[in-house]
Length: 143
Image (cartoon, helix red, strand yellow):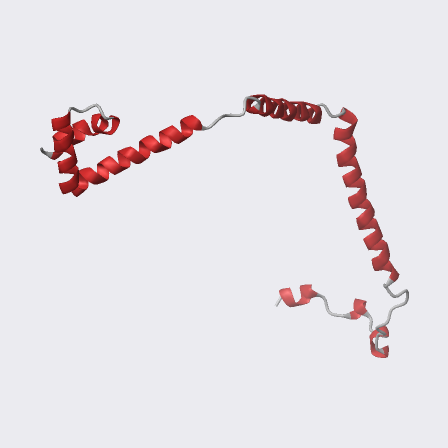
């Protein structure tokens, strides 16, 4: 028996529908051919997985709970979108007022630490200087 014919007959062999002579030939080929034996093993495993899934029982209320959750999310979204219009105006207004208050308080605290009288005294020579008597820039531009 060749691999192509064996691959064709694997499902019938697994289900026990092959005649006795063909069954013996498939068994002999599976014993000698590693590739066909691995293929048969994979097919058998896939059918086992399918049978396990068939035995699982689903919760009949699962769909109801999921749909209720979706409806609750939709209602929450609608309630959030229906917030009163004064809240849409009040929130930015309060944020603006709080920022202005923070700036005002910062300026006030900054002014507390400013000295009320100048600390750096001018030298006596600077007080007698007459700025009007200094040469003008126009004198230098004419040269």
